[in-house]
Length: 438
Image 1: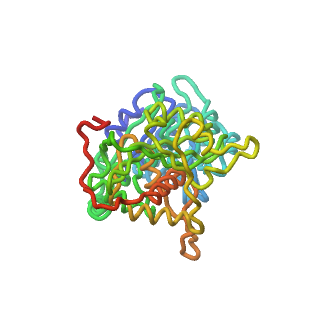
Image 2 (image 1 turned 90 degrees about the horizontal axis):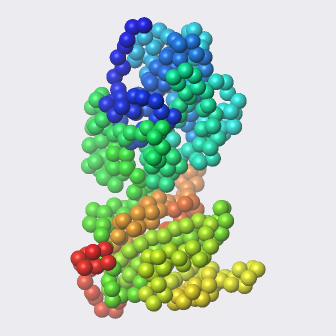
Image 3 (image 1 turned 180 degrees about the vertical axis):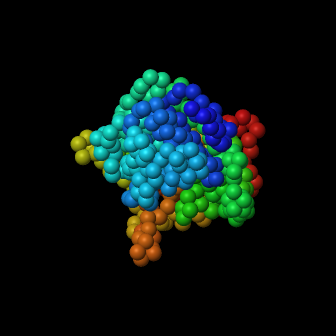
């Protein structure tokens, strides 16, 4: 058999070298990872076919309403770039298959067709592109279907995505894992030896005109503020002004906790809590905590572990903090008070309360400083918090109730509760040296 050479970014040469169960690549726009994985999928199909092995190369995405939403065109173009691959495959408008009948490509959406994947024929390889939104449930169904193996090979899972959230299922499974059989690489525009001049102009334009989005789009960073988010501009301004970094705790000032109450059980809303200090006109945001489905004792234990004991901390709850349990006639407020905390509930703000919190936060944002290391998850929530839209009428329907709303609601509660001092005080950056962050 005649040897051929295939051009790939250097990082992918290492990624595809040697055995693995999972090969994954993440990064920003223009990295060449999608076209490279498409080409390598065709090559794997060619290798299996030439070895006499028959089966399916599955190309999946979380959302695929039609073949136009699939990786079909990417695979076609990758095959057409290599004459020897083009000679092996037959390409139709809606299909790709080998001329010897051994290899065929299949395209599926995981959100609707995940169960049907189990009934497909012999899967030799599954490549999941645009994998950021794929759920844990989908991975749990998909992975066990890849069980084929032969002499010197086994069915592999390939995954490519542009990161958005650190806690996405794809991040935890394939990027933040120590599994030696999972190989993962980061690719961005500078890793693509064929990076187009047109994309370079687009990149520089985004760097100049949309700096708040640049890191996510081009450098593969997590989203700090989604387009249309309530606090997108405010967070960008805070970062540029240096108000997101290392913030010291004032040992003479009392700590305050602002809470959005969740519940217990797997389907309960999250319990979210910000730890802050009001120092003159400054709001020093020192810490953030969020947990889902845990009892109140778990949250109290976190407070104690972090040194936020009753003698140092005042807790403020939303209006339902004094709503009693239907069975045991206790409230979050009464239970926290029983643990020794100074706690009270802020009255209901009435109609339009969510947007009142948003406006209060926007007005106060210029005086807020964040300790980045301990509030990373909370900052992510603020950057994601966005309105639900009625696209037909072109109007906002108020905040979207999703994973970001709990931390954002607690943050807005804090902003509504802030009362500036009667006398003007300094708005200089909070001190670091000698503070609690040392």
